[in-house]
Image 1: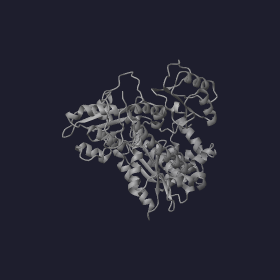
Image 2 (image 1 turned 90 degrees about the horizontal axis):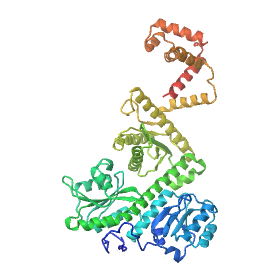
Image 3 (image 1 turned 135 degrees about the vertical axis):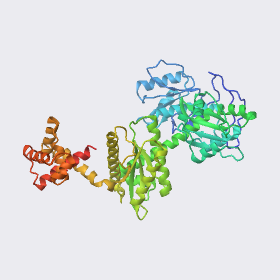
Image 4 (image 1 turned 90 degrees about the vertical axis):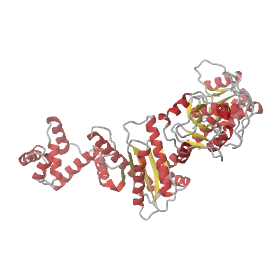
Length: 570
């Protein structure tokens, strides 16, 4: 197959033959230098000679020293688990050089560049050194996409990962307005060429940046995903037909491209052009996703440093460009789900991150938020005259909007104000303590109702730390008692043992006694028993467990132990 013309701007055309490559046909004119440029994966070439850089590339191979050695002619080999100086490393380079491999990608893992360069020169082989932190799975996908993308087209004039520029190029080539959609149904790029017709569906999705129906529930998306190439999707009611293509890299679905049907006269050429764009589209989408992932990871790393690593917190604050003059507060958000780790739960938590980011941007004109573990964090400024009122409003807004991203309830909390950078960890700890407390209340309500928590009951889903500061402080006291063994074999422990052994209700009786300040009638009403029964139980409590209920200090200790135990069990 001849190399097509470049995508150099919104008015490009794909020239050259329109046929597709036959199965098994070796693709020509793909050089190692082309693949390295397209990968953009921070690779360092240890032996960059004109011969090495001009070596043809046909495919990518993950190396396993235990596998049977197959043909690696013109392939890029990823040396997973091989380190400089090991027998596997030397054997790989020897076999790769003798089998005419295009290159070997390795990680240094402590080896010096001079050592890797000497090994590459010794074998007259291209050795590409990847960062130790690089993800092998991503490198495989990028390498394969770069081989296919270089064979299909070049990308001069369209920056890799710029999906809006790529959508403009696709719209120009196919003569139809283009939209690029990720697997979750988010619009991650769309064309803006003037004069191309669109319908109401296209208008709505580009305004909301989201499909009206998630791909998992849309029959048209399922048809497109199941098709090996570009297909025609019939027009919906009062709408226009589409040409659509599923985009994959290494078998992974990256998303899809949708083109407004340019009409019967241009349809065949547009479908053919879409098919030919598939490898290049995959490369663009991989780079766009990597850039997005990098931004999210960077925010998460900086926020984690700010909240956990006090010696480096000032550096993280400077990197984030934080205005700390009036203080900050850490907000924490979580979704109450019966299961975690599923595709749906991952989707929901990422949607929550985007919701938090959007609302914070609207409210404060800036947003510092990140997903860390299964919790979304946001830094809230304190620029208003009543910052806690503003913090309360923003978490209420996010909780109110949360039904648009998940059918499960959202818990939203804010820690106390950190007036200094060094106080941010405390604010984060307070937000998490409040979050866990509300999550436990939600769980308790769900169990009491005989099913999962729905968030529709009386348990609130948003709170500032001060709203629950007293029970949270009591929980800390309870933890201190437990950690230091202060409970021991006191009256509470002995009463618990008796109740468990003989199915008695002495602990409930003591709880009622302390709550009602010893008022027999109030106790009887609370326990639903006769006054004489209450008097008998109180007498037994005092005698059997040697409790002096007239001593205020002993009553305080008993109340503290009972209260902290009850709070810990929520």
